Image (cartoon, rainbow, N blue to C red; front, side):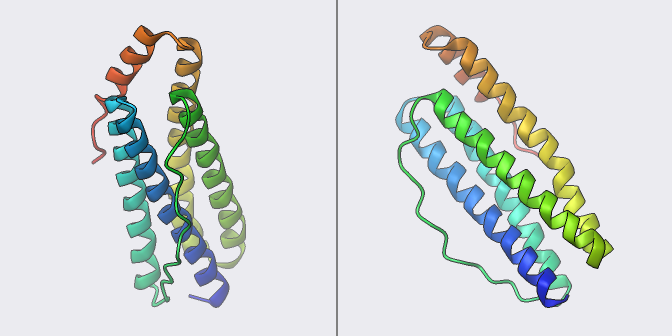
Length: 163
């Protein structure tokens, strides 16, 4: 693994590290706000991002690269309304997609095998963004209707772990 590819993968590892921590912080916030279904959904999202993190670490290790885990910034403890929280989820997923897209564009020119790995993550980002967008859209429809919010909370609480 050349030095540039190693830097690129370590940057993706850092992004996944931030993602898992961000969603865990959001989950704790939603639980504190008594949106236990949303907290559950975010907890599973955190777990999924950790799985991505581990896959990236394994790839770098398998290619005899050096994994560099960085210090990641502390996450906020407040995220606003459920809509505001999930708007932040959507924005973050869009950032992640863009990061993987840039990584892919570089890797496809330098290391086609690495590009295939990155492409798998890019493919998954389609679903990640779509899920977040659907939740944002539904929360926007619900506005401040407590019955609608509780119904959405219950629905999000039914999410099953991937696998």
